[in-house]
Every structure is written in C-alpha cells, then in structure tokens.
Length: 220
Image (cartoon, rainbow, N blue to C red; front, side, top):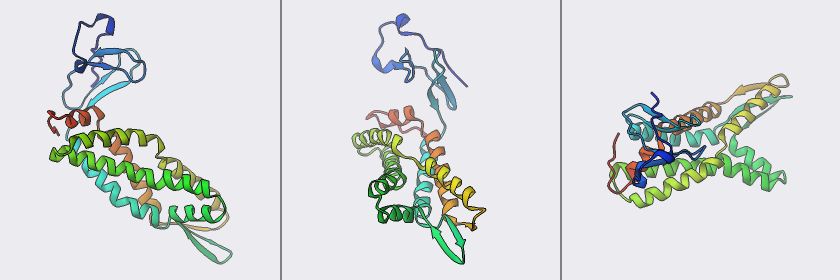
C-alpha cells in the first residue's frame, strides 16, 4: 500500500527536522508520513519508494544474515564446477580463481576480485549482523550507527551478481567443449546471493535507523 500523502516544501509550515524527509532521487522535501505495518510511502513527484514499514524486520533480517554467513565459506571454497577435458579433470572455486589470477601475473586483478567477491561481501554481512545485535540487545548504539553507515558505503563494492553472471557465461561456453558437472559451491553461491538480496529487501533502512536512536524502540 502506497502513501504518497506528503506536502512539498513550499506548503509546509515550520516543522522540526525529524518530521521532514527529502526524496533521495529528486530532493523533494515532504512531511514524514506515519505508516502501519506492511505499508509503503512513495515520492509524489518521482515515485521513488521513501519508506517501507515491514513486520518482524529484525527477526527476518537476523535469520537471513546468519543464513548468508553460513553459506559464505562453502560458496567461496567448495567447487563451483568439475571440468573434464582430454582425460584431465579440474575443479574450480572462487578462491582458486583468485589464486590463478595472482600466479598468472595479474596481481592487481586478483586483488580486485578478492576484495569485491570475498572481503567486502563478508564485511557487509558482519556489519549487518553487529547492527542487528546492537539493536536487539540495546548495546553500543553509537557503534551500531557507525557500522550501519559503513555498510551503506560498502554496498556499491559488493559484486556477487556480476560473478554469478560470469560463472553462467563460462558454463554456457564450456558445456559443448568438455564434460562439465556443476559443483555444490555453485548452489551455495546462488543461495548466498539470494539471501543477500532478500536481506536488502527485508532490512528496511528507516526502521533500522529509528531502532538505532538512543531513545528508539527495538520494534519488530
């Protein structure tokens, strides 16, 4: 349910800043709407989704971030595919791809792949986990706010979906050239990606920021 009932800045009376909100896309200044569970508020000018008030946001997010962390190691270190060509069988993982790039003389590319496919996604998940635990236990909320800001800065550098597309392209090209078998690492990688996408949808930013306020309530 959308609730675009917000007034432009020119018609707003003098209100405290906490009662105003600016659209992230078009900068329209509006009165902050009050939402019920499972309601959404959109910008009346450009249609950008301003808020989504989700039910049980903390429990769902905590379950998803723990699921993603459990899948992280097998997704990166279990074989993605087994390739048999001319009687020789090899198995590839994300980590072995980084090592191969490094030993192939492409140290800079290996470093970028290592950071964007392993380090930054792990840091994002750890930031989300610590933020949720801070809210749940009402401890170190100032650190929780810093970690949540750091998470938003890291979001642009996580590129798991790009690597999934690369894996699928490789499978399509190699399937006619060799005997190829999908490994368990690929299914863990897809599960990790889906868990992260669902986590992005479930972890409503305005609810997290409100819960991180010193006087805010940890509402589910």
